[in-house]
Amino acid sequence: MVIVTANVPVDYLQMADKLVGQKGLYTSRSELIRYALREFLLEKLKMLKKSEQPEYVDMPKEQQDYESEQKQYIRIPIEVKDKTSKPKQEFKIYKIIKKLET
Image 1 (spheres, rainbow, N blue to C red):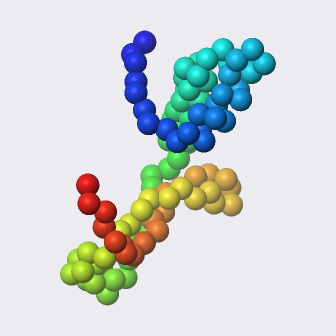
Image 2 (cartoon, one colour; image 1 turned 90 degrees about the vertical axis):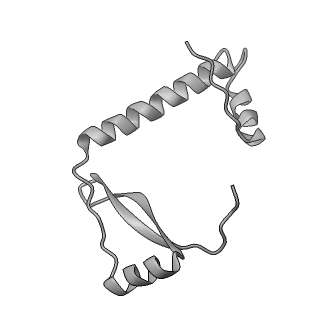
């Protein structure tokens, strides 16, 4: 195994600690995190295998022009389940209010 360091909110660790220990479901935080990561990855990989090609939502021409000039909007991919419960990818458009310096 490889050691991975991650920063997580204190609240997450407090919740994890309730599941760890003599009365918990897991013997250690590491075991809990490995299990949670494994389940997450398996779920996402299964979803990828089942999903069709992503369907893209086109922005209106006026909005594309405005976006290219002003750079005030961003397209974020989201996962939506249709009536057949099949996940598909769409985009939501958000206005950038303030850019954070990195």
